[in-house]
Length: 90
Length: 386
Image (cartoon, rainbow over all chains, first blue to last red; front, side, top):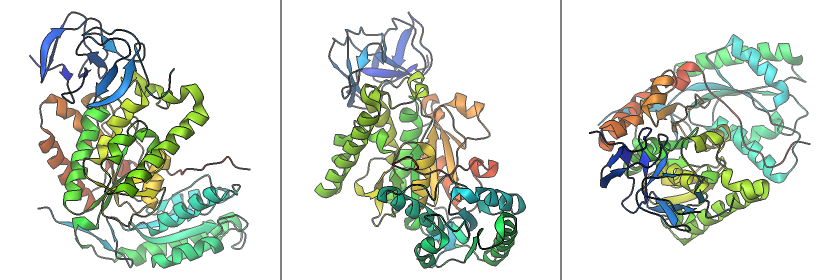
């Protein structure tokens, strides 16, 4: 089966959806063990690769790009509803 | 190895095009430029919204630097300068900055040359004469280390930082390896990445300059936008999956590749170092492109995920799509499809394709933005007009 997510850097705790992901389908990508998608995720958005507690750094490109505002489960969509900028609070 | 060629200029630089630039000193004469453009479509006729009504030293510095920088750009073989007469950047004030370019320049002022229609006729005749005059100049072999190539991104989506900017970065690394110079700006899109860029600086001084540049950009965003500063990313960017400016910035700075940062130059300033250069300029595409062109870029790569047709006057812009959908949807505008990276082709194969296309464009093949006439010309200001 074709890969549906891209892991950019081995340190990352999120991957990028290469197409729209449906709830229940399996995540497939280089360097990632298969696991189920928990909710619909738009193409090019981020999916959590592990359970992320509230207040933890979101790592993409091997660097911190945001901080979670609540617990995010592995397989959930990671976006503005569950993270905030480390620099400016929204 | 691909052979490339260009036009040798008196200052030792080389153009990859040999254009006649028809440039207004002030927006008041834009209509004259538009008339010349209709009469002489082969000339590169640009209009802009500046030239008067701003008195601050920083705005004046930018105004004179960008206008004279466009004249100095190596892709320009000759210039028809159209002034009004009473403006700040009038032809008398501008001339000392452009004469040293060693290019044919003809100057007309609407207030001295019989009004707009007569000035347009004189300007058009001058542009035709100049096209004939420089048309006989032959291309000569060009070395890669004579190139200054700009990297730009705009209308980004989350794939821009995954495919297209990674591909631009691979080309940037290839060019630097060949001894060329690569420049990128868009300081708002570096916010959140100061530590990453500073540790790639060639020395402490450049590292501090990088940190200070990004600090200023961050402070400006905070001052202007307050609590909304983290949204200095357009709604389109967010729809594309980028959640914060730091995330967008990480994807953005990938376009410069991975080499040592040799110099930080001001907006529109010409680099004196070779290798990777950062420009202290804004992220807004039109303003950014003008700064990069005024810095002497002969060629640009421009990645886009949401899709933008924007090109740059006199400078070929190679558009790189971040995903196959937009490449197909805007096929008339986009030159390269980096979306193939997630469909199985390797980064090396894509870089090879881009380098080959770059060589053809240097040698005269038109980019889509060139062929379509999609040039935009705007440049940054720091204060509103009086």
